[in-house]
Image 1 (cartoon, rainbow, N blue to C red):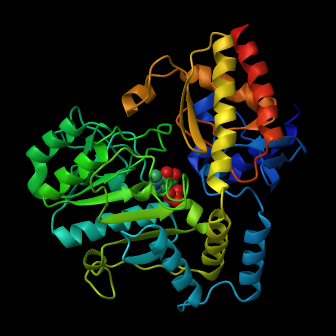
Image 2 (image 1 turned 120 degrees about the vertical axis):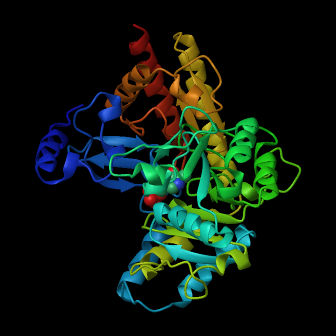
Image 3 (image 1 turned 180 degrees about the vertical axis):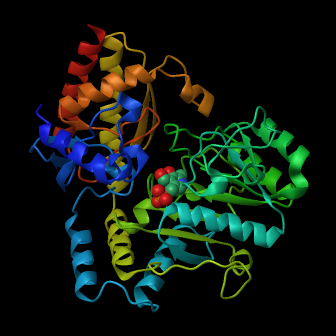
Length: 436
Ligand code: PLP
């Protein structure tokens, strides 16, 4: 496949844009380096690059594009918003409409506030939790990604009851000391951390279904135990549902029937992003009324945004949720994902390639290993070189995956049986080449 234009553009980009990309996850560093593909057009489940090569897309822009690219209903909503003026700096009726849609689907959110990204949403839930509890520390789970704000870019210390160390340059160690990291699915680790630091823990924050070290389900009882331990300690529970909300059903993890929980798993605060903006920049957070009343102008926790709630993002979000509310949408994505994952597994098995697939409805992750992946350590203990090889073989056969062994494959409402068949054909050839 000729991608010479992408290579030229990458060289040019390197001269003007740091690292040639505007988000490090877009670089090919984790899959052996070189030029990422420069796309110029997308429609439905397909991309075309600058050399006119066509790809079937499973990146879905890291999640938001659940209805496929350039969905006509969303495009019409954005066009209408553009014609009406793109930014007012005043309230609009559209914000109320989307807030009501979110509240109906996620009843734990009595009150909502729109922001511009998942990062902002998460960052503000932490501020609100700190304001409400008048405590400082946060417990998070290893491998969960919560955006790039300082506090959540912190890695584990050497055990659950040690304080964090910065995961990025530019973050003061003093700030990292406000964060405790515990392995996902580890209630004993959480108990130990709370026993050590509990009096100062404002919130326990989690991706309730993980999307950032593959797709990983909470073990039965994990979210229940997490909520109970946090509440008994007087800490709030924050769910980061930036990936998961509206991904598996019309709602979020806290209302997802596929979880084997029998008691309350309702969080105090929820952070949203991605899908709820239909592809335009958005974030939102919400929660119980008296917690949310900490936020300015009602309360002392300040948060603001020039672009927040802009009519274009809000209109795209409404249109996206309208598409997703149709009967059978999630079942169809799941049907295709089952065919695809069963085919991938059979194909890998045929060629003696170790492969573990974690699938949740229409999203899944492929781990090159022979063991289950239930936490970050197990996700790290997989063959990155084999993933890189698979990624490149698939790309050269017109299949666009995320360039990282930790990222998910996302089905969209635009994928078809023909796309799945073509993907399986590419995978069969890729595994055969890898095994040769
Ligand atoms: N939280 C989760 C779970 C995410 O996956 C992401 C981004 O991938 C974020 C927060 C940050 O969202 P954004 O990239 O919109 O700032």
